[in-house]
Length: 101
Image 1 (cartoon, rainbow, N blue to C red):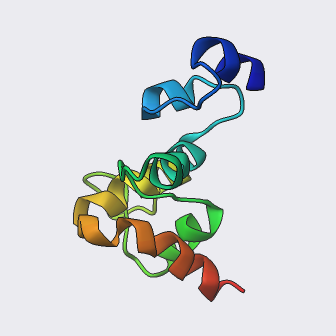
Image 2 (image 1 turned 90 degrees about the vertical axis):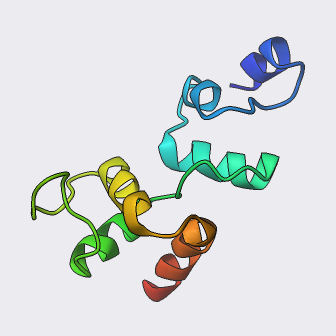
């Protein structure tokens, strides 16, 4: 990954979700986290297993068009972004992760 960032991005990190996701080992949660921390650009909610589990337990999310729980964090992210105000997208992950500790 470091070699890719050095050669393709001039030693920096990519500045789009799509480019971040193209890096080996980078999934949606890390891509969104990097966009927020590295570029101060909120493109989505950082959903890890803790946020995924808690949102389902609270009944905040469901599969599109159903009442079934979401099955993966990325599905949870999309459902959560549908109703959570954008100004709360950054705060929700640390808040829910804090509950689990």
